Image 1: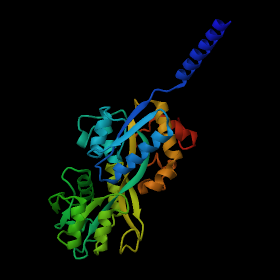
Image 2: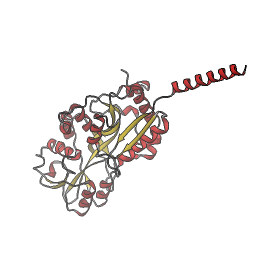
Image 3: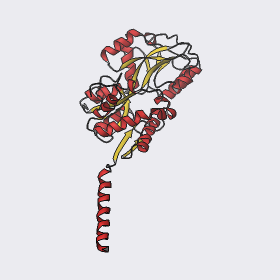
Image 4: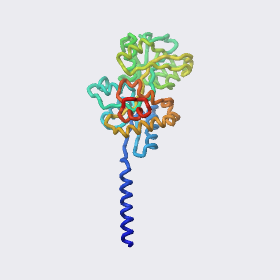
Length: 322
């Protein structure tokens, strides 16, 4: 009798273990490159991966520093990392294999979500008397690092304004923080600063009496004909010291992306968890505050959304063709 009892218990134990193992999902590792450890994007990536770790029991996600958007796109294309963030212009270039990605298209690139806008700030000193992009002709102007995405913004915008870049300006290849110092002491006439609002460098410059030059409808329309990632953006009055009116500028949306080969159900869970906890993310990360899933599939340069993300957007009525 005891032998039979032991056998029954053993069978029940084995069955229970097998059932438990059959329902467990294999842990999925997600590497998420961001930007330099001192930048805002690094904190955004850390907040997102921490959320996924706490809410999805089969995900082990970690963010790490990188050299920024172009590096992030290359890492995901090479399957060194699984998810990351870059501006939609760089994503478009990566997908099509142009500009910095010439000859190496990543046709597997897919969008998880369009996030926040990265607006362009054209900051000038009062004594420069610059009121339009064309007025920057012959002026000493900071265009960020040579070959950077910010310098590409200068090239695109100045060309649209009728200038020959860089011949028509006195270009200074310096970082935002240095540009802010030079604007403050008047050793340059202006600087191109691309950053979410309010940008620290712009706050510093405007506190010293600098202002932001608007970008006209005509220039933005010309840009949009050649570059599908541009959108109009309004820097609201009061964002910066001395800014008493809204200032129109151009902006490029930041995009969270992955490869099409990433599992559909996994991407569905990443997308669903991100949006169902967006208020929590926004409370700690200002750039994620106020984001909506309705805007997540807009202004993303015509790039395809991952099927797993599509499933979530379809469930909440944003995408109808899943």
